[in-house]
Length: 347
Ligand code: SAM
Ligand code: SF4
Image 1 (cartoon, rainbow, N blue to C red):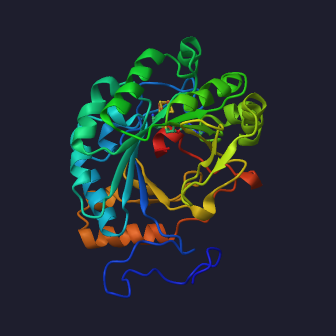
Image 2 (cartoon, helix red, strand yellow):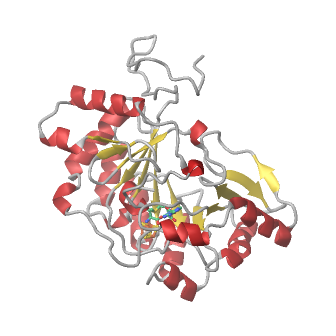
């Protein structure tokens, strides 16, 4: 058995039975989950994700075409990735998003396809996305107050997002998970209201710690609320929460208000890093395999494809990339290894 802390010495590409083996990193972690940024663009400008001014988007020619994107995803399915999440930027503003979902769902090996979205366009997209094969969604919503929502997203409309959430539930993109980034003096006083959504509904409301990605380091420094603080606030309101067992690879630690239909999750990359159980890498919209959200190590795929690389070379590049995934982030040591923002990486 390989210890997770002891690097093994060479990449393995065949299982004992001669079948293609799952791609593993040098610590023995199996990579089965690919998060795909469909675009670096967005129809919101959330204050913890993008800077107020100076946000630069990449020229379209630098982004993967639909064909290039689908090729990478197909090859990932062939080396053991079985779970995909479409994200961004805002994935629903990528042209052809429904067709991309339909195509990805046909690739051998791909068992689950989900999306993280702000749901602004879900009123009209939930149904075609479900019909194309999308399994479920995580929807980002930080507050239930329309004015504050407008402020935190720099212009977003809560009523449309709420319609989007209802549409997702109606068409069966379930279980519904809501992501809420807790920002001091913005929405931290509202975590009880968000958590109370789970009393009647079988939803998971997840509270995220702000990460200091490019362009929002100062927001993190001034406004981080740790999961411990949020949990204490919720227990002050609802009494002791009950722990709920979560999947080992799920970064969320789960709790329940006693008697509630749904659950409450805490995602705590800053105060409780979950690197040991990491099973994911990211594909940026410009075609780099990003090995860790908070480290700059990336592996090029786009230029290789544009220079005519064949499938064997690309599969080898994917395996070699996974192999050199760093152990984890170094925030605790004060290292902020970021040159890209969350919306550019595929959060
Ligand atoms: N636009 C989509 C959305 O907002 O759901 C998908 C992309 S967004 C980058 C993915 C997730 O990252 C969202 O839940 C968002 O709240 C979260 N996020 C963005 N910036 C963050 C930050 N600095 N720290 C922690 N989470 C962040
Ligand atoms: Fe857009 Fe999502 Fe970032 Fe908000 S968190 S600006 S919705 S990419």
